[in-house]
Image (tube, rainbow, N blue to C red; front, side, top):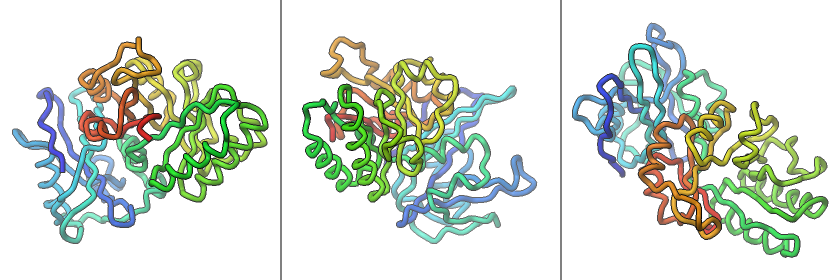
Length: 328
């Protein structure tokens, strides 16, 4: 259970908590807004306003008890989204609830329903909830493979991929600077099949030159994603189609704004700390990282010089989780 302190929130900002509540089968609980309310009839994630001098975690527990009759016992930050209106701003402070006591019911007469994660997008939510839906379906770990050279043994690469899948990792990016043509297509084909069996997403780095005949081509939307390099991100004006997920590498506030305009599903933000691959690059540090994530309106993974020991720090800083090569 985590309870970060109240941040410096301006008086004209309405601070609202919302809960993404999971059951043992990874279904998510949603509630329907009253017909006479603003955006009435749409589905939402349960929650409400943070009272004066109340910690967000305290507000979360109180609201879930009032609205659903349950006691949240295990929860952690998921994502924060700020929306600015002419007369006020709203900070939507979303938490992930994985353990609770009691049986949820609509204490205020509101309809509630458990929905499979994969079916959330089929329901009608307020537009402000769309990043929450994406964050709710993303894992905390984004595995990036080591650079596979043409001289490397593909078998070793696939063995490591299988090991990561067996450990439960479900979001894996493949990258290579020198493997191309039929050799790359064959490797991607095998990797895609392995990910399909594990209900995982294989994310292709945008620098990969994968022949269209490969199973890992954009036509296979069920488990294939695309990760845009920072250079490729800035070249595009529209989100690429035909992928399960589209991600992007970001290093600045401007990069994040462009990614948001494109409508990508999530981004990595780096480098958080000093890295061996780019030792001379200026790292963001956790404080700057947290500020940049706070202003983002999509899920952000922390990247750069991190290990799994940094996962909790990343989440407390507002990240979806961590992305790493060496950590896995």
